[in-house]
Amino acid sequence: MELVLLGAIFVTYGWYWGGVTEARTTAYAMGVASLILGFTAAFDAPSTVAMGSLVGLGAVYGILATANAWNESAQDRTYGLFALFFGLAAFLGLAADLEANPDMTDAGLAALLIGGTMVMHFIAAALVPANKGFKALVGWVTLIVGAVIAIIAFAPEAFGNTIL
Image (tube, rainbow, N blue to C red; front, top):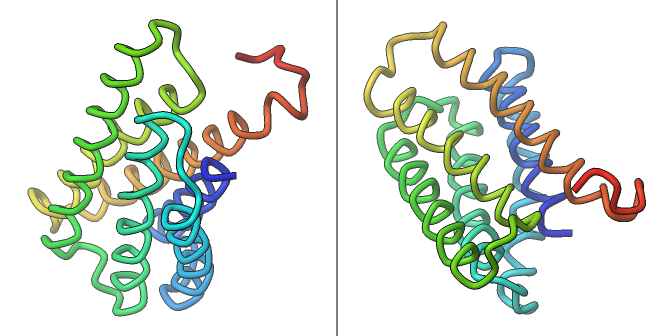
């Protein structure tokens, strides 16, 4: 369920950064998913280190992204800094997950995708905030990554473990 929520947050924020939707519409959808993810992080222990890093910082990232979308300040450098923190935490969670289990897990693959995407968000929000074209590209990449993460989360139940 956690990966589905992260996928929903990424699809929604990618849709906004890609320039398709309004800021307040995005904020409602991301805010609900982020709150549910935060409650999941608080009351349900994640199964792996990678999942713990994704759930814990994913909830914080989602709330910050919601606030940025609500105020229409998505290029805020503070947001970029937190995107960098989330990306680094995802990579560290992936490293810990691979150390414990050399096979790539669903959470590890999601951590790899999220880490790369968050580094792109850091570049777009903190280093080159005036480049609207790069921001739109990062938005569409974020949307695609979110959809892939949601498919990874549904794959074992929907496809009988044939994808991963």
